[in-house]
Length: 78
Image (tube, rainbow, N blue to C red; front, side):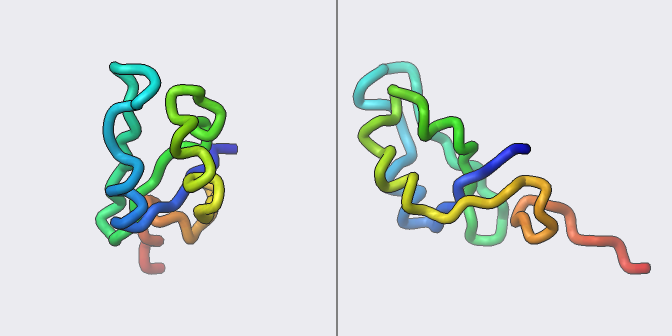
């Protein structure tokens, strides 16, 4: 099961960019074209992103297989 952290523009702006701990590592939230950005939850366990862990942990998470997932294609009309 792939889980994602959902970010708004403000949260995206606060966490995006190079790691202050490990140069060469960065958080690059994916734009879902709906005003929502996503990151995989694996970043919560990555030491490179420890300075952002608390903020990211408090944001909503969603299963990537959930039909309401913002990056999912809309259902075809029957």
